[in-house]
Length: 308
Image (cartoon, rainbow, N blue to C red):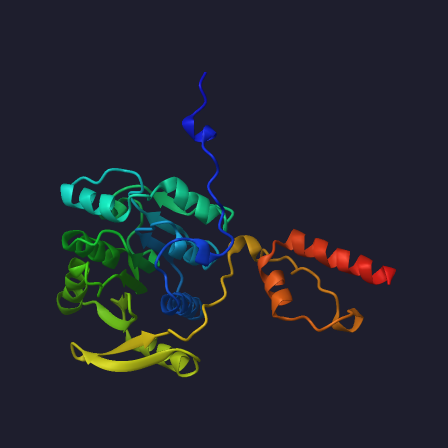
């Protein structure tokens, strides 16, 4: 019996940093994803996460590390499947010729122990797989065609909780006028409230935007390297944000994060350690290396110290 073709394919390279995963997920948006998700959790707003359009997984990897207990993360993408209309098929062939589910899964599993719930289907069918009113944070980055983006926005409106946040990618890119049209139509006609924008993404809610705007402005006031201003759009404030000089946030990816109820790896006390105090590189290693590796390194250091 011939083995499946997948068994003979060479393994894909495993990225070790989020920056090694191809995609367009810039510092300002990493900071904002982090802030919105943390703010929701601090406020007790529970719910699932959703991404429509995953490319090779860069933003999905980021989102997957921020799931709360009992929350579900769903990724919906066509991956290798053919689109059902000629225009969408042409767009996929032109923009995502190397896109495969296998590459997405390999990238995601380089950082996480388990995959999200993957729906390999048209984004228009996401409501067949996700319950209405269950999602607290949704990222729309699938088709760039107006009809599809408009449908994705309406679907997400039904899927979000009352305090849920939606993020729309490429809302101002010159090659994606359909995204811009669908986004601002949702603002003027569908009750979507803008909260903030970056150079690539729009953040909004169908809930009350004022608590989000107020909390976000307070956070921005203390952020080094992040510029912002407030403009009036459609009779309401809109925060414009740029983070060209900011540092990317830390990435607490699940496989390198101590499980709940377990102790973090032990470190040699400063008083019993020779050499300089623990610096940034050592802190980074402790934060990112698997606990078993960290414990082995600590044990080796202790053995060397005992022989001195």
